[in-house]
Image 1: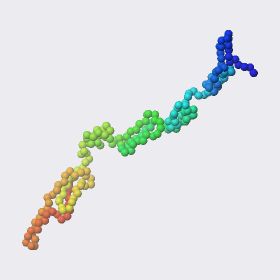
Image 2 (image 1 turned 180 degrees about the vertical axis):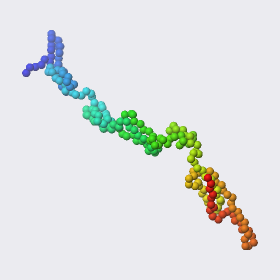
Image 3 (image 1 turned 135 degrees about the vertical axis):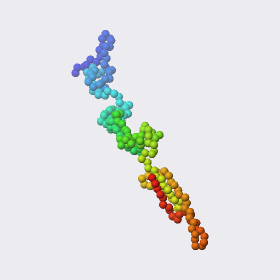
Image 4 (image 1 turned 90 degrees about the horizontal axis):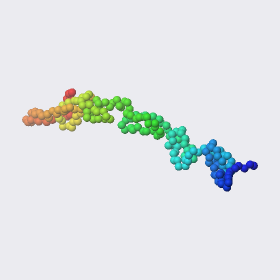
Amino acid sequence: MALNNNKVIYGGKVLIDLTTDTVTPEALAEGITAHDKSGATITGTNTKDADTSDANATAAELLEGKTAYVRGSKVTGTMPNNGAVAGEIADKDTPYTVPLGYHDGSGAVGIAAAEKSKLVPDNIRQGITILGVEGTMSGTEDVKAQSKTATPTTEQQVITPDEGYNYLSQVTVEAIPYTESENSAGGLTVTIGGTGKAAMRARK
C-alpha cells in the first residue's frame, strides 16, 4: 500500500510536518477538505456550527413550530403564536386576561363599544371626569320630584316618594289635630291627634 507524504524535510529543515496534527473528519466542518496526520485527504462531516452547551431556552419559550438547539439537543417550540391579540372590557370588575403566548405588538385592548357609547358628557355629573370625558349633567335632567303633605298620628310614618318619582322635594307636616266636645258628664272631651294613620296628600 502506497504511503502518503506527511512530512517534508529539505536541507535538514522541516518544511511540512503533519504527523502531530489531530484533525479528523468529525472535527472538520462538513464539506471542507484537509489532510490528516498520515497525509491522507479527508472531508469534514461535522454539521455543528455553534457550541450550544450553555444555551438555556426551553420549548415553552420558543415560538410554536420553531426549532433550536440547546445543549446539543434539538428543541421544538410550544409557545402559542397569538399574533395581534385584541380584547374588550365590558365590566369594571372583569379585567381582560392576556392569553399566554407570543404577541406581535399590534393588538389592542379597549372598552367595549356598547359601554364606550355611554361615556358622554350628558351621562356624567358636572364636575366629574371619567376616562377623560368631563361631565355636563346638572342633576336635574329627567329627574321627577314630588312634594307631600302628612298629618301627624300616634304611629310612626315613613314618607317616601311614590313610584315614578326620584325624590321628595318637600314634605309638609300638618298641625296636630285638636278638638273639644261636650260630654255627658258636663265637661269637655279634648282630642289631640288622630286615632290612626292619617292619609297623605301628594302633589307633583
